[in-house]
Length: 410
Ligand code: HEM
Image 1 (cartoon, helix red, strand yellow):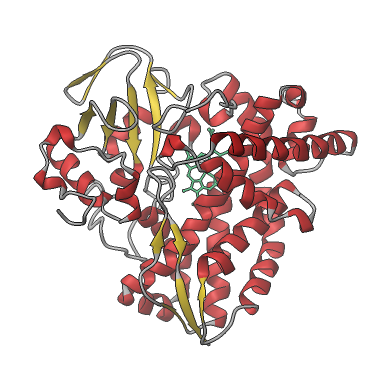
Image 2 (image 1 turned 30 degrees about the vertical axis):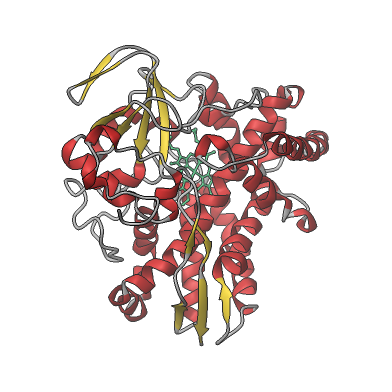
């Protein structure tokens, strides 16, 4: 046993290797579980476990094959491993198949188009500068609270154009919606539902205001004016679902990449030295941070027909979980995958954003936020020192940090 709770995966019979246990991620032990699966049983069936029977796809190219075959591997009704534990299952386009998925994604995507991002870059740089200039020098503080959460919150407030004083509602709602028994976190589901209904009421009011005003490029205005989505306001479940998607999509993921970069640079001091010697490496480093962290550990699909895959028979109705956390460490595709290398060749060739029709809509926003942040960090601080062990999140879905204590040097 490696800890009281987590057995060494090599000591288990292969059919008892169950990478869905949230504690594996809390204790950063999932890597060994996936290494064993990639080596011995890359398309692996878990019969029991907390989330019922499911297949684990653990190799990079197999995950791409599943992702790009959306007719056989459906995103409906859900993209997380667990089944909803109540009747509150708002539809959202990440958990839809074509044609409805395509229509709704198309309506929201101008909110993060390259043209819009280049318009927003100066504003984001200014906000980043204000956050960094407010940090204490030489004192310990939690980077997650002061930088990662703050910056992603401000970015979301810009993308939704919510009144500035309301911006902290966004991470609050995001946390409530990702806290769920379906990803292994004990939750009061009635309370969760009540809070999300408050979120719905807030955005319904904003939607009506935006619909009555000239069109703009924030997510709400875009959907309220698009002929294909403007009636969504009359379908409260679909509205709350898509709001949750857009809020969560841009929140935990980028937050944990921001925290993950600080942790990785401290774990790999030679890479930090390389960065100091050549800040021109930042764009490449951003992709490496996202690969190394892999902020979403998995997405799941449902087989719509029997299919032979990797020598196994996946049956119609089976749950198929694509473990990005494993694919991004697949030694047959990625050279030295457990190393964090900021000058890695083809650093963008990772699977943290997924593939195919559901590939992350916000990937360029995330990369821009991280790039601008690191450019501004390097102008201000000679070192961000990690103090003690970071505290990780208990989830098999969001892979990240609750607390990263640091000390800054000017
Ligand atoms: C979808 C990861 C940032 C919005 C996804 C998917 C992943 C992902 C893995 C599913 C891909 C698939 O099923 O093939 C990430 C990571 C991020 C990030 C790692 C940061 C480092 C963002 C941001 C936004 C966003 C900033 C928006 C503001 C979305 C949306 C979808 C999505 C709307 C659904 C796309 C669809 O179903 O067509 N993301 N994401 N994401 N992401 Fe992101």
